[in-house]
Image 1: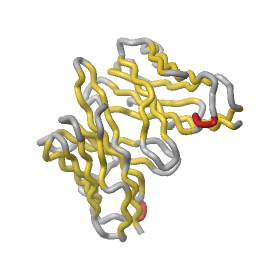
Image 2: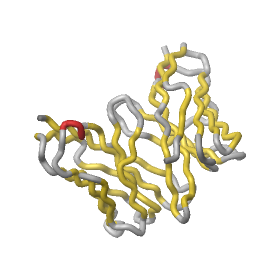
Image 3: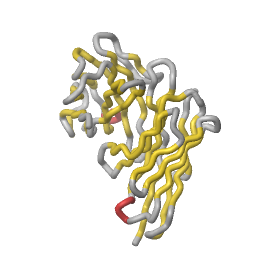
Image 4: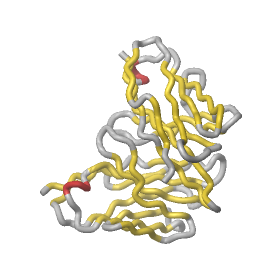
Length: 113
Length: 117
């Protein structure tokens, strides 16, 4: 079964810390992996998309890495800010079938001043 | 970038009635669309995959007679929740996928919050 797991489930940190969110997936046959942000009661905001041929992507204070062979991805957030508080979702598009995008359960991040 | 819209953004209905949610790709054509459901404080669960002009493929445990999906054109997919009950109250999010060069990209709508009373 194709599954995506995220650790930790929740994280509370003071402002300014550098953070690492982890995502693991069960099948290395993937098309891509995507990190999203979701604010309470809202839809999804795409943060970073890593194609299967890539190792990492960067956008501002965010950096995402992908290691297909070990089935892992990390999202690194530098110099966290209170505005970064949200749920971060990792989603993997597995190959085969209809190439479905499967989501992890998310990491709820709270950055306090 | 590509935009996906959903209508309505929120809906309240009485138990036993049916509700239709529309998902549109505004500036691109999508042969494949997906419907997800999200319960409070949980992640998105894929309900079904919808291909234009053919029947939807439902995930295990999703009742196809209850959640009717129609993908009549390359820019529109609809989800109809039939005989809705309070346990169907959830946040429904659609997604449209395109092939950009050799890579798939998937774009999400803003979601529809359904409350069944």
